[in-house]
Structures are given as C-alpha cells and as structure tokens.
Length: 381
Ligand code: PLP
Image (tube, rainbow, N blue to C red; front, side, top):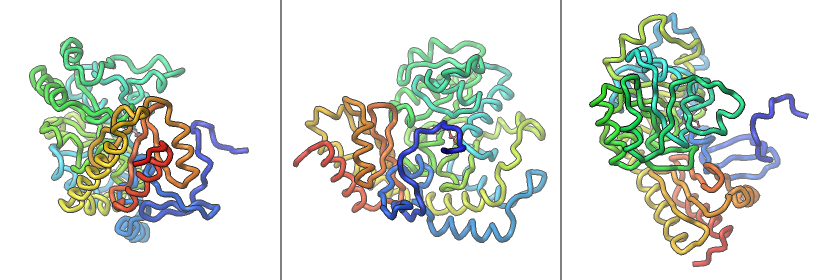
C-alpha cells in the first residue's frame, strides 16, 4: 500500500543509483536510460561537475530567499542571456512556473488578455500553464480553465492570422512539440509567426522547457529558426536534475516585472544556482553542442535507414537528441518489452516512441539501443 496519490502510472523499476546513461535498480539490474528523467539529466546521471558544484555549495549555503543579492543568480542569468536573445531572467523551480511567469508578464506588459497556443502543446499543470496547454486530456475535470486561451492547429499559419485580434497579448509555442508527439515546427510557420507578432505588437513566447539547454544541438531550439523571441522559458535540463526553472525576457519587459509584482521563495536559491552554473558551463560550449548534433544526425540516419521499408513506422523525425518515431500502432507493448530488456525509452502520445538520451550518450550506447529496437520490430538487415 502506497501513501502517495496515484497521479502517475509507474514502471515496475526501483532505481538505486545512476551514472551517465546507466541506471542501477535495487534488484541489481542495469538499464540504459534513453529518457534522461524526461529531458532533465542532459549531462547524464550524477555528472561529476554538477555533483561537485552542489556538494561544495551544500557545505556553504543552501538558501537565503530573494530578500538578498545572490551572486550565483547573477552569474547564471548572465550565461543565459549571453546564449539567448533576452536581457533579463526570472528564476523559479519548474517548467510550469516558468510558463506561469511568462503568462503573467505578457498580460501585465501588454494590458491584453488573450494568448494563442497550439493543439497538442504541453506547457505544464498549474492553472495558467494547464490552460495554455492544447490537450483536452490534461484539462479533464478541472474546468473552468483560465479563460482567453485559444488553441490553433500547429503548422497552420492561416489559423493564426484569423485568430489575431486587438486583445492578443502573446503567441506561445514549442518549436518542437515534445509531449504532444515530437512534432517539428516548419521553418516558414515559425518565421511567419514572428512576423505577425511584430506586425501586431504581440509577444512571441517560446517554451523551451523540453527543447532547451542543448537538447537539439543549440543552447535553445528556437535558434535553428533564425527568430528572436521576446520570452523564452526553460527548466528540465537547467539543473541536470536539481529542480530549477527560468524565464528569459527582453529588455522592454523589465519594468512590467517591478519589485513585488511576481516572486518565488525558492526561485534561484544558491543550491539550484550551483547546479545550473555547472550544467550550463559544461553544455554551452561549441564542442559539446557540435557533438550533440553529430550524434543526433547519426541516430536519426540509422533509424531512418532501418525503418525505410517498415509498415510499422510512419516517420522518424527530430532534431539533435530529441527524436520521435511515429508508428502505425500503439507503442506501449514495445516499450514494455524494451524495459524488460533493460532499455528505457519514452512515448509521446499513444503511437510515438520518443528518444531523449543524455547528451553525453556514446555512439556505442546508441548502437545498442538501435539493435534492441530492431530486434523488437523483427527487422533483419
Ligand atoms: N513545457 C514543456 C514543453 C514541457 O515538456 C513540460 C514538461 O514536460 C512543461 C512545460 C512543464 O514542466 P514541469 O513539469 O517542470 O512543470
């Protein structure tokens, strides 16, 4: 009997420890983890630099509250703005909170209330971020939602044009929809959204909670599109497993978030900042990101080749080390079989296999997982 609310359908695995791509269970079995704690442990489990930074900070100072100046916050904010298009950062503890901050800031700055988001998007589980999420199953039982969100078909610019009116504060989107099925935004669609935002004085808000922090081979996935968003939200990979989120915004937004207008007790505390600093310093280097791109291209190309003639696979798509395999049938069983063979892989919706290995994964580990996927789809080449 568990004393925990049953909000999660859990796997039958109890993890004891982890190192790099490998998780060790309490029964001694070792698993290849291609989930990274759902795009969180981008540097793999217990990466030395992050472990050392957190250990060192834990002995110095954990928490003081945002009544104080926190030098580590300044350093992490500086790194985030150097690698993005924003100039100011607000720290929080999760992706939902980062999006919540973005929604509040958009309303406060523009004085408008409507936010356009997209079908199959996922932005979190708080009331604001849940209301922004374009999936009925996430809303089920919680209505009425926060009003003034409109969900539009993804990659359909005509619908966006039709939905724009004088009360639109922002357009919020993932450039690659993660939870919704690894759907990739078309370059023209994303660029036309930016143009519409500029034309109508609408804020462009990119949710990089899953795609950010090197996952796609760039610090942020929007950087593949040649756009310059007003607001970017991050979390997941930011602390490599230490809970931390951030909203990055442009200079013009600064005054709307004046003292007392928003806040978080834990947001940006020294322990979280130590983890984030070590994580960013390791990931935001040219060599590291180039390696993500190289490994991602290799992985995609191998998968595309093995499934070229498969009637079970509709499409292999992705960017960097965020890859989806859309199948013609439900993938629950194959993922269960893979778990029995000590390979951990996620789904994204019923028919999409979602691969999110640590960005430190080796080619040998990728080859092993490809072999396992091949075996389970009975492909012999
Ligand atoms: N936004 C995106 C794109 C996500 O993928 C997620 C989580 O999966 C969230 C927001 C919510 O993040 P959190 O669970 O940290 O609140």
